[in-house]
Length: 131
Image 1 (tube, rainbow, N blue to C red):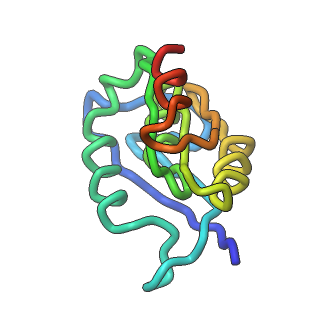
Image 2: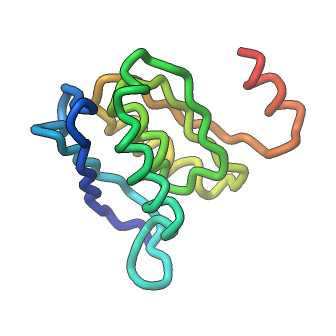
């Protein structure tokens, strides 16, 4: 069953950005996802990487393009988009894509967030990288 979780990340001085869900050096995201062992909807590694991404918020203000592979709930792509990136969150599992699409539809931030099915190594991956 899908559950909703709220994530909060601190943005260091010089990394502050504006937008809905962003205030005083803090970013808050609300995402849907499958509950994993331990009650979370993201893997621990994604949380750790998200903390590093928040420390690099200033680099994402210019609107770079971001592609998240195996996104699950799309935490990293949504975080990058909240700072200004144009992110596409993808997963090769058909069952995960509706959740990614729901999270993308709910997203409000500086950048953009889109979702798509993308099987790693498939011709579609090469096509997506070429766009």
